[in-house]
Length: 472
Image: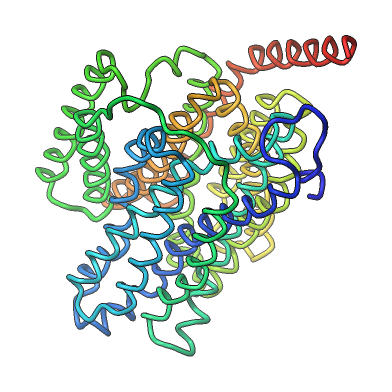
């Protein structure tokens, strides 16, 4: 870990000592957003009881946060080029923190939903530009290691969120879950303002029409996926999908002719970027699907309690925490696409082995399969993220970061919706895991397709570095 903060002559990014504070600001902001999602899920029954509302209405405490966050990822990534990523990140953490205070003080579901939507906007502002900030903070030679650290932080958030939520609820009421964000948010705002790289905003206009179309496109998609997952009437799902498709058509037309497009389409001209983005999206379909399907499998088919189920999930994020940073460091030295493909192969093997689980299988049978999935995903994600961020020009980092965050969120949402659709159709839980395996197979195909391209690019970088060393 210490090598992340070593400086060498000619390094880009921040000096070694300055990186520590900047990274701490990013870690705190990311943890608050990630922990919040899993922590609040645990509290939904308590919120429903405390506010005297039905469980179906209380679910919107989570849904509205996720939808408002996902719908604005591309918008905030583009906006960061105008106001600077440092200012946007500080504003995002500030809004998230103030909205957390409002959530803690809410006495009705309506006011809580308003503040949850604001929390989602704050989270979108930070998550949309997080990867691009890592690229600005760290030198290019350490980009994989830095993104491995980011993967570890996200995995830690997912792993600890339920435990933190359960611990707080065992000694206090649900508003204290939101109050926990206040001291961390204040610290993150101060650190981000002081330590994140200062940069001038781009001159020029903002693609407002593209922003509105982007929100309609993503918002409509996530409302449709939520409807599928909760078995909403078919006409509602179709209506939201129609809105999303129409907005997507308009969005693409707008991006081709806008002076300052919200999402510059030229970044997709690089095959490695497009294939890495496709691999990420479909891999997250598999992971999102597996997380929901396995909850049903462990509890309804295998008879484990909710607490036992939580423990059975632990090896997956724990393996990502352990493997992710090492995979990131390795991706700085060897072909990242080859590493990512190996990880996807392991993830595919893990999902297939889980699909073959017998209802009478023991704890050990479950644990090694979950561990295999976590090792595979930990080996895939940081190298793949490195490929995504390093294949676009530095001035396009914010756009690449926004596309990356959107792809991840869309994949997760689609995976969850597929579980709901399959279960509503009466399909066995194991069948949904086979669909997750199919998604991983698509991801593996996309990853393998770019491996020769990545190897050639790495060879060019190595020759350039050797030539530079020789000239010195």
